Image (tube, rainbow, N blue to C red; front, top):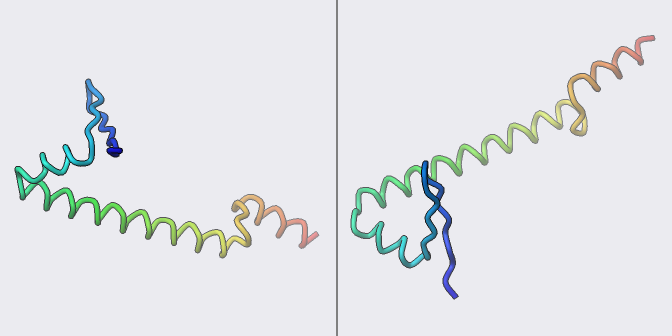
Length: 78
């Protein structure tokens, strides 16, 4: 069974099979290269963002919000 890829455009939504999309990309090798480059950059950015969120949660103490952390500090000082 073919895998379908949904692509939302401004006025349309098109649905292609993976095979159809690969065929279209193979017609323009520069477009193929650009799409791969862009995909790698976006995936790297997502991974970095996820690391930053995880790091922030650890710094704040178990995923608490800054307000929760500040509230606990105020309570412990009283």
